[in-house]
Image 1 (cartoon, rainbow, N blue to C red):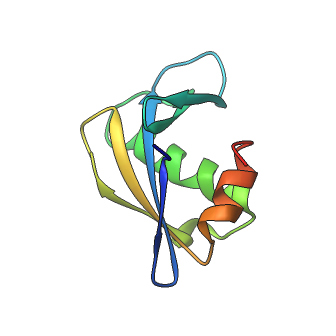
Image 2 (image 1 turned 180 degrees about the vertical axis):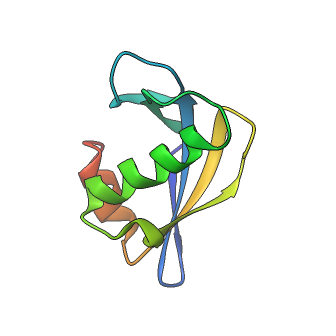
Length: 96
């Protein structure tokens, strides 16, 4: 299974987050999700904010283009990426 699904005007991306890592980086696939290590701690939404900014930065999009749809307090999160196709998302994270 792939971590991306096409949506009208964007893409849905499923990620597995590991907070408090030594550095922010993409690890690869974790089941049917993209695993991302984040330096940010999971406190007061810091990791969620860092995740959205990291994904937007990798895609060359503004931060507001990435929205957390579900998984606010979970390691497994679903993001909506406006303005990017599934192919662009896969390529940006080295999965294409």
